[in-house]
Image (cartoon, rainbow, N blue to C red; front, side, top):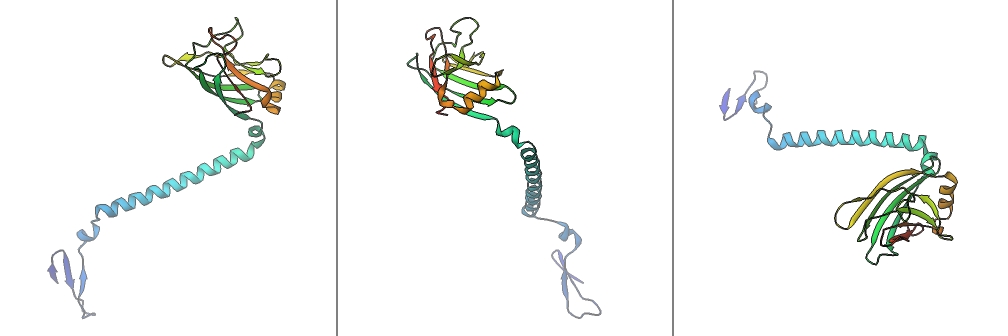
Length: 194
């Protein structure tokens, strides 16, 4: 056996041709890129398994209770000036008639602090277009997040028949936010525009 660097030249009695054999220490070494490739391949396989499991779980949830999801309606309402010329905002409403719930997230800008127009009425409502009456009081509690931005997020109970009426004809309803400077409403937006 003759050594050339880390490789040994070996001949055997039955085979007259010499062959190159690397010692174990050379075979066991892996380059950093080889190790990185093996690690990356392992991560890809694990990610594929996780995605597969998540897909099965989501399919089971959607298939098992699709009727409950079908009844939920989400509206995005863009709020424009109605009593405050600088006012703007956006509201996301999630109406759930089976549970009798209306969940909301409202952000308003460049208006005074949202205030009840009269004690006990709340500062944001869903109104009917025909009469202007309050269909759903959102019972909002706004918090200031700067000098001219206010946010309210919560869920309120509402009559299922009223929620059904909103879902059946959203263009007949609008959301508005009241302030002391604009008690009839500082900003408002139609549910149909969502």
